[in-house]
Length: 304
Image (cartoon, rainbow, N blue to C red; front, side, top):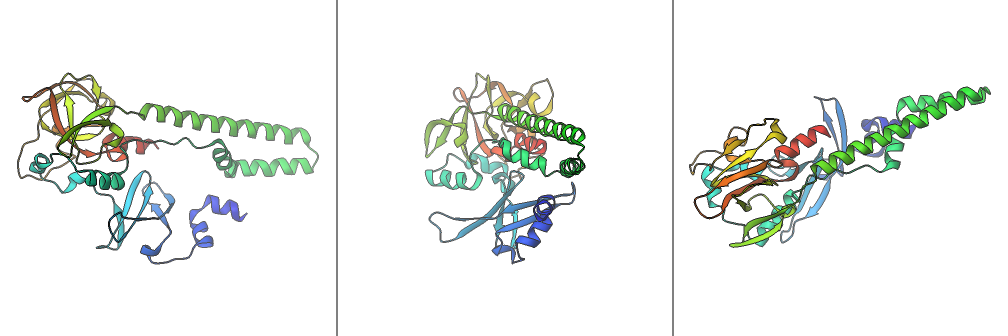
């Protein structure tokens, strides 16, 4: 009974297995989403920062990373680099050093929307502890003790078939979503004042990427155009079949706004159909968001 209650209610599990401590000392945190009436239990990770004599605390909830902020003595959502930038700041970004790349990769992770497919055993146990199937198991035992074998067998067989179908459907949907969201290609990036070619998974916020003007490729991150213009198909995100034009962001001391300045942003998952640049065969853009922090990532999170 205790195992069942722990599975059904995270609050009961926390009261039985943990004790309250100061937030900075916590090994696990209990999160309540009042909007959707959901409760989550997350493990706090303590990671030693390289070349720094301090420990970073964070946890991940619904693909979002929350880091410990000493100033407010609370966990806060990881901030994107564009949240504190002016438009002119993008023109000062001329490529990251190896140390900066390593720090950004540790902080933001790989540029990939990774969707895991739960193992069969995990799904079977999860379904089996559902109140409905526990009631069915109780009914089977009751009918068996009363020697109503036919009723017991019928209920047992239908329950097994129901769990099997549910597990199969869940795994099928997760595999389909994983395969559709999987995207990786080679990109040209300015790093350490040199032009290099690398996998899109290695992109980090602050990178300057070179986008071919001939088009016909998918954007692998959210980035701001700092040189050139592009005609982009955004139907994957918006459903609009009409291509839109993205232009260079003005070099002004104006606060950048991610939500209101869409005309300067190339979004992950969209297709560049054609580009135009005054200098050479490449447009230039600065990476601002990767992985689940992008607009595409937010859509995937909403599905999950």
